[in-house]
Length: 95
Image (cartoon, rainbow, N blue to C red; front, side, top):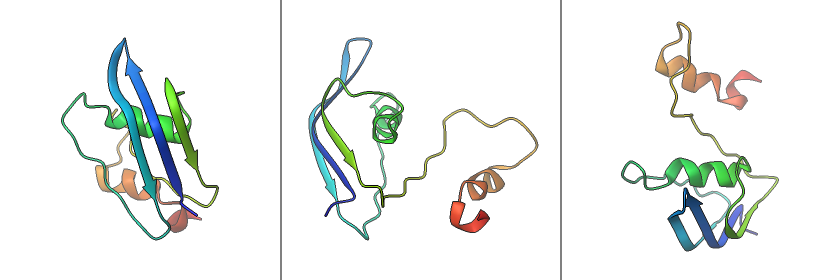
């Protein structure tokens, strides 16, 4: 069973299509990276996968066994450096 299945996904921001009919399947044990130019929709896709925003069409199914890590684009406030901020998000390391 796949950890993540995306089927015919449609994501729009302010009427502009970022994704139109995108599909993807990620099997257990696989790690993926997401790259693209600014404004391509990478953060929007991650927000949709995390359930923070609803897609305009299609389906996203994320297994309860899946683990997803992401770092928000906004810089955190405080004195922590980037490495400490990233490591703080590692729940296996901090639990």
